[in-house]
Image 1 (cartoon, rainbow, N blue to C red):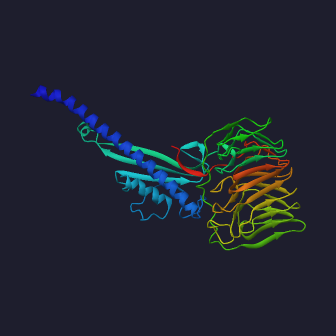
Image 2 (cartoon, helix red, strand yellow):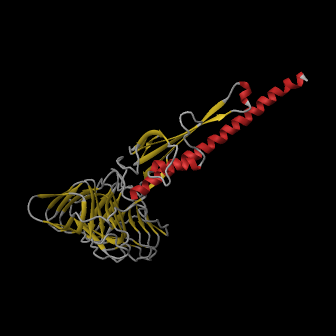
Length: 437
């Protein structure tokens, strides 16, 4: 009998090892899944709050920045900020903070630094790191003196802006001549592609000696090219509107800060961000302070005598009664004419990172936005006109600039000389919530 019992001890120990280790692996997997779900939920919740008017600058009560801290023992329902939402998802998956003496802890850390400490190689706008710890009791191995084992998991999610594969995009799915390079226009896109979504037989139309160089040129339909144009890849796949999910600045309920603003005369006028009802007309020198300029009706007019400069600027063009609601009441185009000097760059952080011009998506009547500048004009950032034809002409000094053009249709005319070489701070696609660890 004694011999039999001695023989069973190793078997019992091995069975205990397999059982307890297996349980720890199971708990580890469950904790990792819960950490990932909580991190993504916290970041997506932050993006929802930003879409509703908050921001990532750590001053908001709904988008929280904090050092690692335990989830509250009681989570409000519904949650009142993004961190509480992350804690709720961890709880849904079976993990909560049970206090200092408890067997589980769930901590969330969040900030808006460009890089999360757990993933320093990825540039982000906002990140959340979730850590879960659980003390597992050991059943079989306790007879050998091993009473517990601690299982941990960690995951980081972030608001990530992805660099686009194309820097000039025509979104219209069927228009003839949706992408035109005419006259003596010379368009050179270095290290980025041109995309034409139209299925028309002349979706890409080269005429009058215009030249287009890009790597590659993707055309869903057919292309009419010339000798100085790069070969086009016809029959390519269409791409979706890359900014379809980007929250527009909230303008429907905002009162007017300025009305029917006309700037003329000598000297330089400094303008501040705000809501410009009736638009903005510039006939002299203007400096735009960093921020968002909401044009509610009237658009932007810059004549041959104007000079506009500004860094960290977004210009949102909408209607005079808030969102356009599918119409164009009060909507006027962006018109930059003649030899005026325009030097503008987009923000490099925040929810409108990389966005220079932003057209209200609900405008559905045909419009043409015109940027007809001279050799002293530079525009750095994304020009987003999803429901307009964007007409470019002039000798733009865009070399070494980071510029993206996205419009319903794109038309380069006259003596355009657009050179885009995205080597600086890259304009970006719409933000997405991504697991980065």
